[in-house]
Each structure stands twice: as structure tokens, then as C-alpha cells.
Image (tube, rainbow, N blue to C red; front, side, top):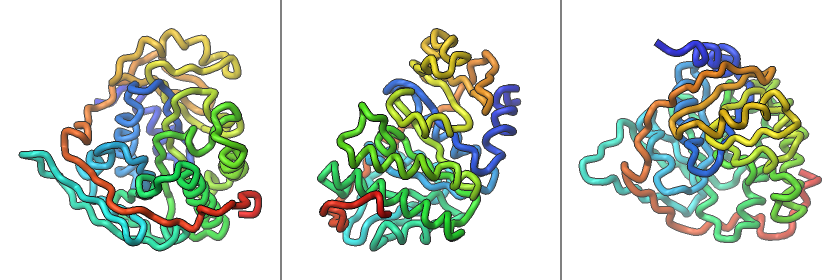
Amino acid sequence: MPSSAVTEFDQYCLSRPGTHLCTLGTTGSGKTTFLYWVIDALLAHDEIITWVDTGKPGELLPLAQMRPLNVLVPRGCEMRITLNPGITLKHSITLTEFNTLADVWKMLRRDSINVIAFKRFITDPLVSTRACGKLFSDLIEAAYDYQLPTPLAVIIDELQDLAPSTGNAKNTEHYAIGAILQQNIELIRSQKVRLIAGLQGWNKTRPGIRMEVNCWAAKTGADFSHEVPNLHAFVPLFMSLKRDEVVLIDQQRHFRREKVRVPYYRPGTELGEVRYIGKWITGLEREFDWGNL
């Protein structure tokens, strides 16, 4: 029997397409595991799931225990997956090649968890940042043109890498990429496209982004600032959370003082190893004018 907090979370967040959700906590607090739990729940709502792969070892393997994976990789690149002895994944993993990032949003499958994997095929961090910005710019363009399958959930584990605050941006270009998402985050919500993200710290992403997030999930070390006094007052509670616990927060920044236990998902490194083979030449190596996307 789910707890009252989980039942309410389903009603005010998961069952409402386009509702943005962010989990906040320190490194090692269990944010990725929480994202697995959310994906598991969204599958019951017939929502199209897209996971933006950050290239962490084995990160995508637990997803194959939930549904078949449609892994989108750049043409000419590949993944080699080696399972540990005695391990059998419940579902298949299919690699699908794309030519450009604009193609990705046309290749999503409703019957699979879609995994967009390109970051580990790019060696230059600046180019990787540009590619991530281009991916989400193309998402926004597709939403404007009503060309996205919906309802759609896009999951990214490190939001500060996409839309950093001033102090966390690598350079002015990196900061400008986040401005594109900030300007359009309400638009994609109205098109039943939601962003579900992990964030290491309240001040690590743009204020305009975090204030547009509808719901929050506090993990260990969630550092809500004085901007949200009703949450900041409970930082000591959030600091006391164990790795498998979370506090769920609704659109009005209200929550039950109930520590919800997140189900256990076997870590990807215990399932096997994912190797990324090849280098992707994106065409974004040149200077790029993000203001004209």
C-alpha cells in the first residue's frame, strides 16, 4: 500500500503531463535512483520516456530491467555492453544511429525507454556543452511546430550542466545555452513535455529555471535557499535523510513531513559494463551563435 505522500505525489505530479520535476541533493544522495523510481512510475501513465545519457558507468543498464531500450547513438559510434557473470537483463537493448541531433526527436519510440547517448563520444567538453544545448534547442523547435510525440518526459541527471547559474557556467556561451531553456520551459510544459532532472545544489542552476520547476524531491543535503523560506526552514530535516529516503514537495512548496522510502534498484555497475566506442564529429566545433537558434 503506497504512503499518502506517494499517492498525492502521483496525483499532483506524475499523473499530470508537462509537470516539471527536480530532485535536489548532494553527490551520492541517491538522485539517480530516485529518477529510476520516477521512470518506473511514469511507464504506468503511458508517458514516452527519454533519458539523456551522461555516460556514467552502467547508468543505463537498470533501465533495461523496466522496458526495452531504444539507444540513440551518433552514426559511426557504438556501445559495447558486457554483462557480469550470472546477469540477464529483462529487456532488449537496441542501438539506433542518428545523423544529426535534430533527427533524435523524430526517432523516439513509445514502446521503449529512449536513451540519447552522445556525450561520451565527444572528447572536447565545450563541444559537448554545445551539443547538449543544440539537442534541447531542437526539442523546443519541435515543440513549437507540434512535431513531438506526447506526453513526453525528458530526464537529465545533472541539470546544472545544461542550465548553469552565473557562477557555475564554464563561459558566457555555456550560460547563454541555459537562457534558451529558461525562455521556453513554460512553452514545453504547455505542450505536455516535461523536464525531470537531478540537481546538485539550489544555486547551481539559473534562478529562472528553478522557479519554473513545479515539484521538488528533496534528497540528502538539499540546500533550499532563503528564496523559498518555507523549504529553507526544513534544511535540517533534509540533511537527515538517508540515501533511500526522499521528501516530496508539491507546486505550492508544501509537503508532508514524511520520509518516503525509494525502492532499491540494483546499480548498473553490478549488472555489467558499457563501453563507448568511437568519436563523433558534430559540426559544432566551430563558433556557434546560440542567440540565432
